[in-house]
Image (cartoon, rainbow, N blue to C red; front, side):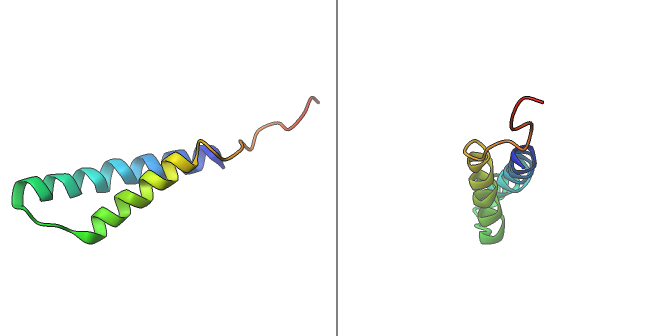
Length: 60
């Protein structure tokens, strides 16, 4: 679960956040959907550090 949150959060943050920043600085156009998706990506990315991993739970 931790790796899934990390990868989804990172890809969302890079793709949507980059698109958001490029449009904001180039055109002065504020796209709330891309900004919201980048914020969700940041939250998933930081949340992945607080979720316990789905690996082994004890010695086998």
